[in-house]
Image (cartoon, rainbow, N blue to C red; front, side, top):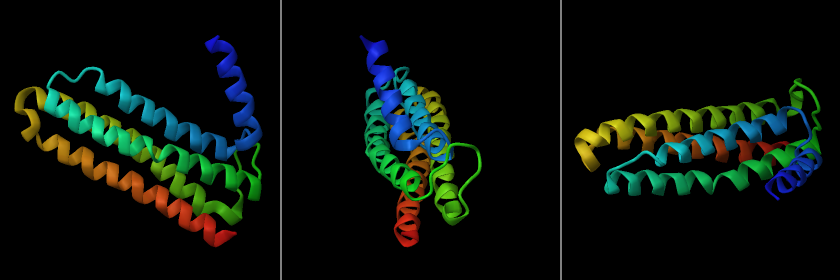
Length: 151
């Protein structure tokens, strides 16, 4: 059953996001978010886990916003290749930064997990994860702002 659901989702993604840069930007963000959630599985300390899970929830709430920006960008400037539509270059740049930032946040969470084993909730790594999650949110807000200004 999961195979058919994935196939339907893939067709829906193709229809809404295309197969070009907007789809890639969305998928990059989603993969980084998935990686962050995978890292949570290895956290032993409950306090560290709760803090990282709270940040995971905040990041997950950004995915529908990223998707909305990518769908709107595809509707405004369709892309089926690797060329970034010039009118929305800055939107793509912000989405790319958000995707990279969520991946970096996942890396910071992995380090915080290891640091948390020694220091627990007092780990300095948790503050690093918080700061990186803020950067992700700022990039998504910037992409939304730029897209609304380009309309």
